Length: 111
Image (cartoon, rainbow, N blue to C red):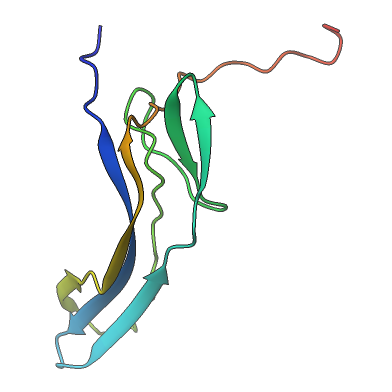
């Protein structure tokens, strides 16, 4: 049995991610996080962002996204930093739902 999660404060962040290459050139990628849809699931909040995924089953259902950045041939990434440039509260005193265990969808024949 999992311990009950404490109420959380959900926030939105704007994440500029900078990578410094071995030749001192810098590439900055900004990931803008859209407003999520907050769905009530058995009294808990499930934040939904189109195109974003979730962690493994049983973990808190906080949307996650991986960003791939192409590195030119012959270059080496020597530093990566994440800067939170903006944030705001989208919900207070809520309990975040957990990612459910995967289930098989019923077949169309099982009407």
